[in-house]
Length: 154
Image 1 (cartoon, rainbow, N blue to C red):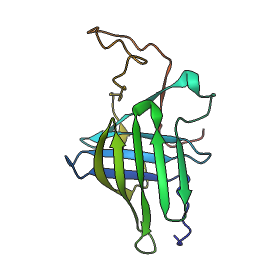
Image 2 (image 1 turned 30 degrees about the vertical axis):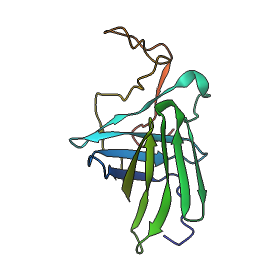
Image 3 (image 1 turned 180 degrees about the vertical axis):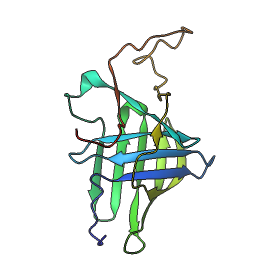
Image 4 (image 1 turned 120 degrees about the vertical axis):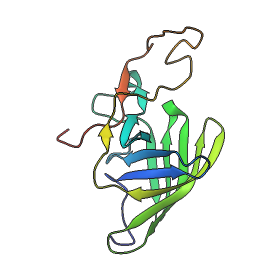
């Protein structure tokens, strides 16, 4: 990995400093993002409103300028701003601030070679666009896309 390392196609496991919770993020080639919350070695993918993306497109955006990056997943109200640090031949770290629903937390991320097992759960945004918050059993009101998938041909 050279200094000019691109984040395109990379996958990271991150830890929040605030509560030590873990999550996974990916930077899809072509500019979209994916991710999910990690618990007991299983990831619960973040969902997105599939009616707002074309088939084969991923939600959100990411940008990289040198060592600085921004990873944004608007449907989940998550934004991470930080920097990439190359530590050695095969090691890199991301450090930054996650801004999620108004909360800020420092995060550190290590590169992953493959996606952890995808569990049964999904991370559904708690807003009225996705579900009716005042009903106990609510169905999704929009077609849901799953922002992570097992590695393989797309």
